[in-house]
Length: 150
Length: 150
DNA sequence: GGACGATCATATGTACACGAATGAAGCGGT
DNA sequence: ACCGCTTCATTCGTGTACATATGATCGTCC
Image (cartoon, rainbow over the protein chains, first blue to last red):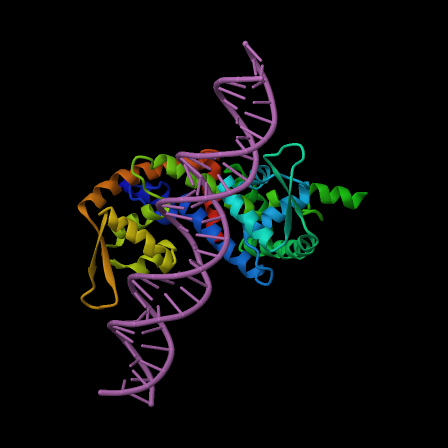
C-alpha cells in the first residue's frame, strides 16, 4: 500500500510511459523547433542545417567540408548534401585547397553573405519563439542543463 | 566600456553564436540520444520511432495508423513507413476495422510482445544513460523544463 | 438520400542522419 | 622511395520527417 503510494508520487514506477522518457520529449521538442524554424525562414527557404552551415562558414572563413561538418555536428555524408544544395543556389562557392588536393575550401558568395544577414535576424526571433514557453529566468537554467547532455 | 562588459557577462550580445542557440543544442542532444539508443538497442535492431510505435500499440491495443501517429507524434506519411517495416518483421499485425473500412487496426504479434518486453528493459537503461551527465537532482528540473517546450 | 467536407491510408518528392564502402591524396616511419 | 595508416570527398542504402496529392470511405447537413 505504502509502496504503491510512493511509486505513484515520487518514483517512476513499474509501468513504462513513453511520454516520460527523455528521448521522446527531446524528439518532440526538436520537432517543434524545426517547425518554428521552417515557419520563420519561410521566405528564405533555409533549413536549420543549411543555416548552420552558412553561419559557420561566415564565422571561420575557408573551411573544408569535413571540417565544417565537425563544427556543425554533421556527418560527412550529411554535409555533402547540404553543401551541394547551397552551392546549387549559389550561396557558397568551392575551390580546391592549394595546400591539400584532397580538400575543397568553402566560402560564402556575395548572395550568400546577403542572405545570411537576413537569416541571422530571423534566427534570433526563432530562438526567442522556441523559448517562449519558458519564463526568462528559466531559459538560462534550461540551456545550461541541455548543454550538459551534448 | 561598461556596456561591453555587461554584454559579455550576462547578455547574448551582438554576435550570433551558433552553439548558443537552443535549436542547435536541441539538435545535438537529440543526436546524442539516438546514438545511445541505437547502441542500446543493437541486438534488437529497433529505432526510436519503431520502439515508440510498439510501446504505444501495447499500451492502447487496437489502433488505426493515424491514431497511433497522433499518440507518438508522427506524421501519417512517417508512420506509414514505420508500420510497414514493423509488419515486414512480423512484430505487428494488421486487420481491417469492421466498423470503419478506411482504417486498418494494428496490434502486436506474439513475437512483437516478446521483443517489446526486452526492448523496454533496454529503453530504461537508455534513458538512464542519456541523463547520466546530469546529477539526479537536476534531472527532474530538466525534464520539467523540456516538457514545457513541446 | 445526395452532396460536401473531413478522415484514412498511400504515394511522391525533398531533406536530414548515419553506417559502410571507395578512390584519391597526404603523412610518418623505415 | 616505399608501405601503411589516416583523412577527404563521394556514393549507396536505410530510416526518419514532412508537404502535397490522391482515392476510398465516413458523417453530416440540407
